[in-house]
Image 1 (cartoon, helix red, strand yellow):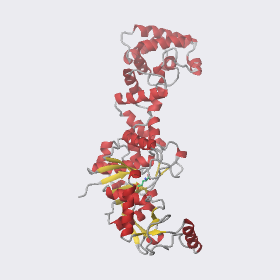
Image 2 (image 1 turned 90 degrees about the vertical axis):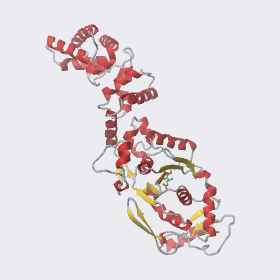
Image 3 (image 1 turned 180 degrees about the vertical axis):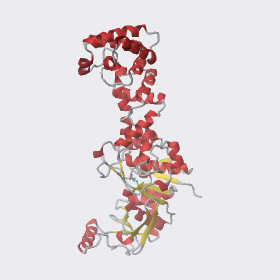
Image 4 (image 1 turned 45 degrees about the vertical axis):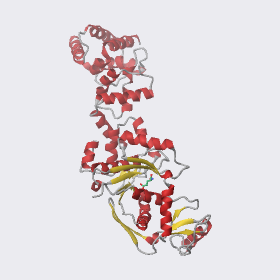
Length: 464
Ligand code: GLU
């Protein structure tokens, strides 16, 4: 059996976007689970719009997601001679020809066809003239005049195209450069690609590419066209719908494993399963699970997926990522063990690391710089509650161990003595130690803050 070879061929004219990452993931999984090869090819023939910066950004994003490639990156811009050698071969074998028609002439042919109610096409004027190369001449592919191009799409099933839908399309421009369809076929064939899984925005290219494969005597790969990803309004996903670049999700605090689990479900299913680790995907992925209909990008579901992976995440690793997030967005330089103590408090609820970083800010301030919400202070730090806080502070100072259990016991004893309800003291304590009315569990929070910080905050709050 020939080994499976798949590829991901982005154009470096923009960042790796959600749709591209999903296609890359499908190709990666299929190659990996079959012991095959996954190739990265940079389709940078549009020199004006392609940049090294985007190439680097795409590779960074693939590394972030863990989509490691076995070969490449190849650059189409360095392979022009190869493509041209195959164009020459097609001319030599009579499967392509030089055409001297000007663009005005071709436009006129199209106009005539349109006027007659036909599909606008090049009319084949130079097809049998046997012209040689010359200035301004393009090379056109000799599309068969009758018949159908038929292929069995791995996702959509049999697809058939009447060749009369096509004309003798250009495969080499007048400037001597081979066109994109030529480059893709030559690359895929030369690289031994066995499976072409790509967005169905390329489905219309496939019949032309198949004709080129056949004319060059290359074996056909299996094609699979993945339906588009739509925004919440059911229109093709675009910047209007929010972040489209994968790395923007990193900056927003999404975990790569959550992105993978979420992305794979945009167009692939395995029973009712919703959450997948990479190991599970490598076991469960199959082309048969790829769906025929478009999927809708759903931020709530992504958040849900991300919170799941945060919940089960490894604490030291999350602390690392949180550290990065904090240093990127603030001037704090938190100690590692402090962050490792903080993370578990937020794991049960945080949707993103960014949210976690924001909600954990109160831990990072010292008592002097901690901002206190005025409304919360007015509402909860009343003359009466201040008296209680004073007593609690004294007792905290005297506690032998400053852990959440001792703190809880101490507060419970005080409630019993005074006949107060926990509710009467919970928010005043919370405001005193966090400056706000929202935080993780009080006693856990105090334990993590530690005695010195907690007492400093009590003292500060009592001066407000
Ligand atoms: N370079 C194309 C793109 O970025 C991919 C074409 C293909 O997969 O054949 O959309």
